[in-house]
Image 1: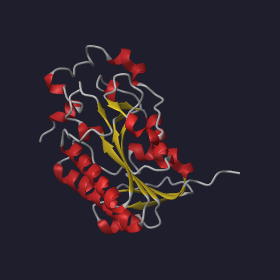
Image 2: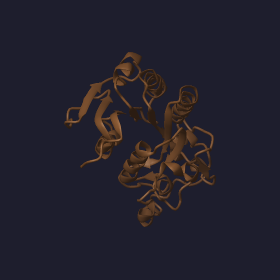
Image 3: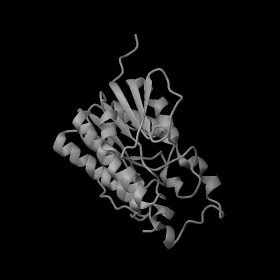
Image 4: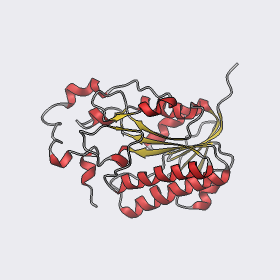
Length: 266
């Protein structure tokens, strides 16, 4: 006899994006039903999935999305190169709306897709953990720092369980020298989110999303109770990436953990 899923309804925002498409499959056995949302249309739905096309900057939409939801994976956001107005609407107003709508709807847990860019102004020589204060390297990182502190406030004031995932470079393979430290494989990302859904008590937790890379700058030792153990490693790609053509992001310009993204203006 199959075990009953841990959760009733799971909401995934940003569901048509690269990570959202992946996590739909990775988490489907952990919830009885999955609600998906994005600003872009999504049509390839499974029997246990429903889709609501929505702009998260609209609070009334956020309240509709949360009806009957038990847990949220909040991926919806624009990327580092986006202009400030887009970051403001999607990453700041949209994220506030998700937390506030979750509070009003009685959601138990929110898994927030933060980013290593929230701590991107630390230098590569520094080693960080889940208690390292935010030091954003760009407006995108600033928006993720906002999301982390918003999540902490909603936990401390309203008891909402929140996990902020400082996601590294999540791609099928690492493509440059910096990713030898920051790479997060798709398989490890899936396992990470499964652990966040399966953990019994999370309170407010910060966790770095990174694979088992020997050059890693981050430690999850203080958040070991989540149970995440990385499987893949960027070390397997080291020989191909440490070539003169690719290892060109050294020196003063690239000394920060955000790499070239620390040079975005402002």
